Amino acid sequence: MNPDADRRWLAAAAALAARGRPLSRPNPAVGALLVKDDRVIARGWTQAGGRPHAEAMALAAAGTKAQGATLYVTLEPCAHQSPRGPACADLVSGAGLARVVVGYHDPDPRTAGKGIARIAATGVPVELLETPECRASLSGFMTRCEHGRPEVTLKLALSADCRLAPPPGEGQWLTGPEARAHTHAWRAKMDAILVGRGTLEADQPRLDARLPGLANRSPERWLLTRGAAPDGWHALPSPGDLHLLAPAQYLMVEGGAEAARAFLSAGLVDRMMLYRAPRTVGGNGAALPELAMPALAQSADWQLTDTRQLGNDTLHVYERR
Image (cartoon, rainbow, N blue to C red; front, side, top):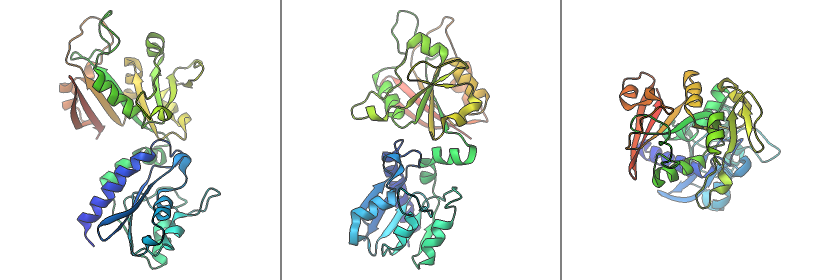
């Protein structure tokens, strides 16, 4: 056993799990790799609608080659029977594996340690080696299990003076095509997307994933309103009503200073993706000066975790501490 190698394989399985998001709902997006002689012999990820599970996909792809291999899986194999498929703990136990390495525990009380115990009881060595990569790949599922709501990502485009829109007559967007494409890629990872009433009325946004091959991953559209939502939309009365989005695991809040402040003041934002354009807007438009870089650098609530250049714009990603 090599813990460093195990962590690398688990990180690879976590990256693979992203292929299942968000179509795996209501199940988490899980990744699984079967490795023998330091080579991947099969892989799997949770399929649309939640079945088959990642382990079942990998074992089916490997067939008899699974014998003597090590299974790396990002989440503890399920221990409960379902009308939609067998318990993965039983599939794993009967596959002739040499070893199983699990990247994160399952908080679902139907499994919660039972999956690992069932595998171990059959004589297959199994180890729980929790890694940040596996935890991050399951963040929406964990947030729903722990808090009864989806993980919330606040996405905003900001000018250098923290305005949210260009001056009248200067186009619709603050940011360039690279930043907008990046946003669409992230939309495709979301179960739901939300804007405020002002953004809906001013921009009539489509809020879909407009990248080749990702149209089927466009998120559900939600409107922050105490009134009725238009056709094709859902109404969220307040940030405190996030339980209404069940079974969604990932929500992106995109539109408007008021919606952003509502979620921030409620302490319900887990991540911020701030696309900063190198231009000053001025005027009296909507602004969020509290999201200026100097203010966030002094914040006890937020940690800068990623910075990248997207054309002329800069993306700053902040995670709640």
